[in-house]
Image 1 (cartoon, rainbow, N blue to C red):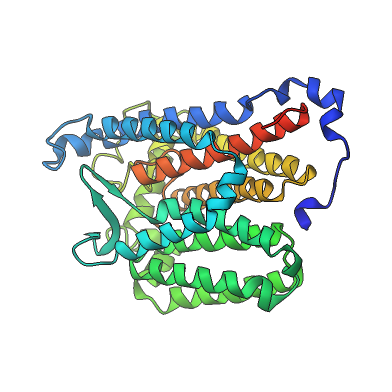
Image 2 (cartoon, rainbow, N blue to C red):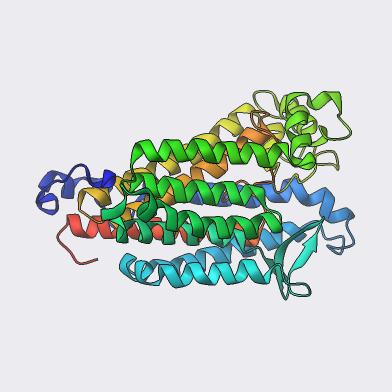
Length: 397
């Protein structure tokens, strides 16, 4: 398998590795940037939403409405993450198929009239009392777990298109169909990317992979071309200021906000874009508010934190692969693909580098489903790293 190209015999007995401070029980290089992003999310969500919350009857005109909920989501995510961390990776592997089936059930339930909740023409939420569950968010994590388990189980068949790729493709096709009915094209792209990346990292034939990748790109292009709504977004991406009050409204206001921020920003809380000019200012376009209030330096800091998290995920996965822990390695790298790709797409949309797409910024944008799913993913990543460190010290994980 590709993840196991190199093996180091006796790695747990390497005194230089064991004595290195980075091989302590927990990876501070992973925990600190993740904690920084979560804390910054609470601050920036409050700043970006205060005017909207104060003016809305839905929030009871409470300025701190979104602040309180975001802080609660982060707290719940950390608690559930701490619980998830207690389970060994092998337990997650054993439960992966059942967890994935549970995610499929949720995706089906959200489409049932009277069960799923429809907002702005999209049926993506399950109402659970005071909160709404968006099944597509935890499904990204479930896709990581299932794709890693599938790849490990089918390792000997990864060179065969029919036996190695086709079963996973059919499963992902079913998931994609459910997501398109909602519709949630952004989640579809991320989940398909996770599955393909895990298959490739697990040893799937490279020539077949790139051929199939090309076919999928053709399919995505056709879905855009055949959908007037998606096509309008692509057109507005190239010429946002030709229709600043229509299709180009979101991107043009995001670019204006980023332009006002310049290098140092206008100051925390002083954004103008969030005053009902920039849509989804505390969700999809949170980075534009960060750029306006904290400037280019703030945007670069956020980009740097996400780049570091992605690199650490792949590094942890590589360490696991060196010890023959193939499932753990694929889970870690799958989480890296998820966080890296979704943050790249969101930032690209905010900066005008990609067409407008409804994807939140992981660990930062407002939303309980996304925050909790991200915290669980980081907990699993920490668990993989923890078991790596224990094995390197000759201990049981």
